[in-house]
Image (cartoon, rainbow, N blue to C red; front, side):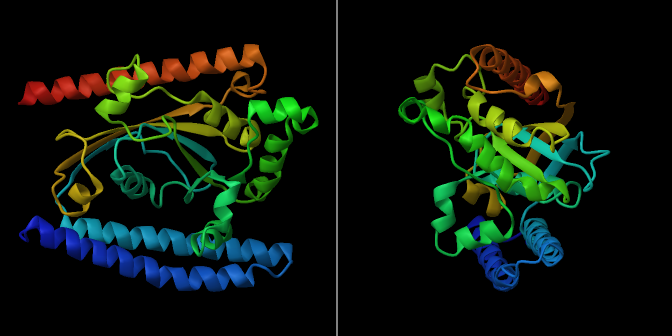
Length: 299
């Protein structure tokens, strides 16, 4: 609707609407978070559904802002058959802060509200920590190898703690998100890692294995997501200011087999899991190469 505006104005107006929308929903989320403190299981379940409804509404209004101020042509495949009644783990490549808005755009109302695993220390972040807790973002505590060597009695304690934190997802479907590379792709990071992939950084198998170890009995399917920007990787500002004209997202649903579940400290399981995640990343790398080739052929 406002595509004719210069990009600086478009970006500024978009950001203002994103901020207003966030502040608006912050209030009911905090109120519901306080109400959730009442230690009644049925009451807390009701509040949990209301909180997720607030989060979904927040995303929906952000998506309205995107439609108003951008002219993005969305090429999305593989989202057919998804349902808000199932449990998913999203594994995606990461190139830009815009990736989060892209994922929220294509999955909103199709899968349960997307949540991230967070370090336990982040619960103390002012305001946000309370919101993440209220929205049932799972907080995890991981011990280093050096720490476990000094405290062997705590081996497996981190997984057990996370399992307990995720117990609430047994009654309510959830989607857990993981950017497998752990950071955004840049040519400099790619060179520094000496990544064997043309278009991706090295995947961090440990984080995915940790999630599956903690929630493997609850998450039913993996959503393998490939995000591609035909014009090149945009900044967040490029995205909100209307400079992005096309986004391609390919989603492939994969089952979670029993051999993907195990103790990452076990050398045999670790080797097997790393081989699996590297094969997945090799396929994704090839997919991006083909998308780039198709784009150059069109040019």
